[in-house]
Amino acid sequence: MGFLSATQSMSRYHIMDSFDTEPMEQVRDGLIRHAIPTLENEYEEISAGWTPFESPYLPDFEKFSFVFGTYFLFSLRIDKKSIPAKLVHKQMAVEIEKKKQSSGRDFVSKNEKSEIKETVMDVLMHKMPAIPNVYDVLWDYDAKNLFLFTTQKAANEFFETIFFKSFNLKPVRLFPYTLVETRSAFSSANKDRILTLTPFHFSR
Amino acid sequence: MLDIATAYNKYAFLGNEFLTWLWFMIETDQDISQALKTKDPVSLEIGNSLILENTLGDNAREKITIKGDQAGLEEGTTALKKGAKVTEMNLICNLGPEEAYQFTVKGESFNITGMKTPAAAGDGSEDEIEGRIIEKALLVFRITQVIDTLFFTFLAQRIDDDWKNKGLDQMRTWIYND
Image 1 (cartoon, chains in turn orange, purple):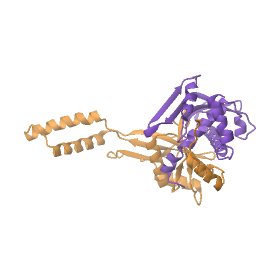
Image 2 (cartoon, chains in turn brown, orange):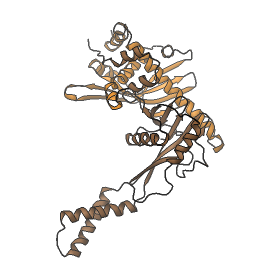
Image 3 (cartoon, rainbow over the protein chains, first blue to last red):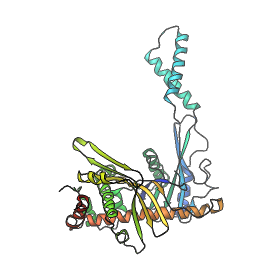
Image 4 (tube, rainbow over the protein chains, first blue to last red):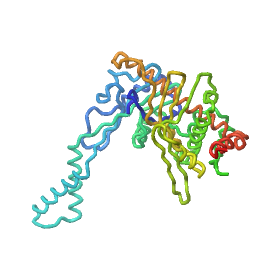
């Protein structure tokens, strides 16, 4: 569910630290350096990178903007090849039969099976197109506030890794503890009191 | 800061307690605007789902899910009496007379799903895209600010010396209906 769709799902981040100079230029550099490659690597199972919000399949940051008012908006694209297990089983059966015929034996050893499986996976991985998934990122740089428009754990993990690599800024996922630590106005004493709380019970 | 994974699990209960407190605030017609310290009228309603969880012995968990528009929430209060807390709830939030939001918030992660914001103006043409993006961004930031402020208000009450006599006692009175 993308940023402009009727409904959205999102996880939130606090961005630690800030750039020393020219945030817009630093963000542009990071996005370009870690943009998703235009040409698909045929043998790579997963490929991830940034792409403009308005152009998810043509990652051209010279042509499309990532600055909208005071916000940065761009997308994380994760292309993943996924080979259905049933297809692997079918190809394995075909290749095992071929091996039996070529060797003149009516069985295939365990090692031979492993080799066949490796070859089958390589061939299928090469042939299989990667399926793209696009997740929008909205960043209020001055407020150190960022939304990733998905709640999928794998996408969050990719985002955290690639964001740090791109900008050298650490995104801290916001949940009860980190909200208190990073975004509340509580004094240190009150933060300490919060962190010593234990669950309450309604029973009498 | 603590290790993030450890802190996530250790303080997940604060998010669940917060959602339980929100339900109490809604059901007992407490003034949400006052809790937010704003003069603008703000109202909250329970939307179409409420999930509670109760930790039983041996790490077993009992989960109570109430779904549907206008669903009765009696099972929910019964679960509270047995020690459950709200772990996820769908909320309808009205900011002023024209801004209506609906979303589901999860206590342990504060993840928001199924968020519907007020419709952004415009016909969707390319020329208007920047305006739509800025407007949508403002709406999304505004509603999360409301959630955060309510969470911090709850925590301020929770660490107050009077919490047991006031906050917790009031919630018990609501749950036990006395």
